[in-house]
Amino acid sequence: MAGQAPNMLAPPTDDELLHAQADLWRHSLYFVTSMAFQCAVKLGIPTAIHRAGGTASLPDLVAALSLPPAKLPFLRRLMRLLVHSGVFAAADDTTGSAGTYRLTPLSWLLVEGEGAAPVVDGHPCQVPVVLAGTSRHFVEAAMGLAEWFRKDVPAAAPPSPFEEVHSAVLFDESMASLHPEVDTVFNQALAAYDHSGFATVLRECSEVFQGVQSLTDCRGGDGAAAKAIVEAFPHIKCTVLDFPRVIGNKRGDGVVNYVAGDMFRAIPPAQAVMLKLVLHHWSDEDCVKILTQCKKAIPARKDGGKVIIIDIVIGAPSGPLLEAQLLMDVGMMVATKGRQRDENDWRDLFKKAGFNDYKIVKKLGARAVFEVYP
Image (tube, rainbow, N blue to C red; front, top):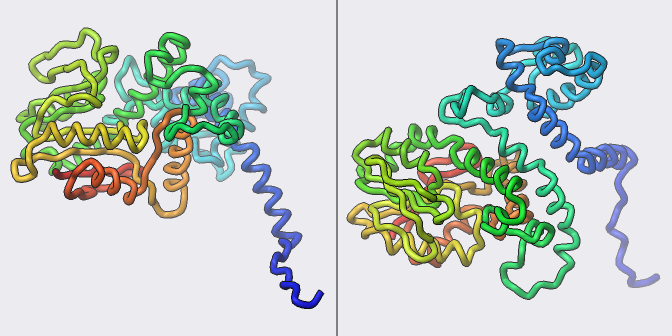
């Protein structure tokens, strides 16, 4: 018809569609990789390889894990997928089909040591993170995303899919009351996640803590980070602030002081306040409230006042690191009212809370270390 715009929508080629079909399978079955990952953790495969001296054959694993010998061919298939995804490495070929395996940096994080001692110094075992992220409760919440998007909720910060599906708020007393066992799993995961890599921060960003005389660690939990700070910098007087149910009966031990309170209402005064992997659990509005209390708790910049923030900053180059940051963002959307943020998002929060300046001291993996100044 005269005057009709030409059709600019050219269909893909056959070759492109065949590759797209493979991509469709891959995206539809990504959960199988997660479940295979969970299976390896529950079976204890990383620990078994570690105890075998760093490499283990399929028969070694079957014996160490007390598996029925008939399951060996199936274990081979599971391990082949996990070698491809980088969880393990093949010690004897490039595909993992021959059946001898070794640890990768990822599976090192999943080796369970004796007691609570980490196998890799400064990096506690991340098994609880895997078990929480692949748990039925988390997966069920994610499966409700489409229904959650369709629901018309006028509130600025609607309940998370997790809250709607399970009628409880993650890391809240409501979760402990309704699902105490699940609450324990997620709190163990939170502790493992929070403590991972902090020793690296102390080594790589020591200038952040040099010259600081006092520090309040907001949502500092069991005080592990505060104790690590005092061990590295004995001159710093540390206080841990957390909710009363977290602090419990903890008392100051001469090294770290514990305060049961609410960071939304008041923060114990100190030269520096630290928020380590805290703000991504909260909405922008709540973050501004928390940061405003931080600003009240510290002195002027000329007197050394600052807020130390350790958190994810979206913006890694395209690849696995960026994918991890984006997955963590959607994961927070599923489970909490929080989010992961890029540098512009962080800058906006600091400005709204009344801070004058900030700098990124260093990026460490998916995370960054900020200093924020009043």
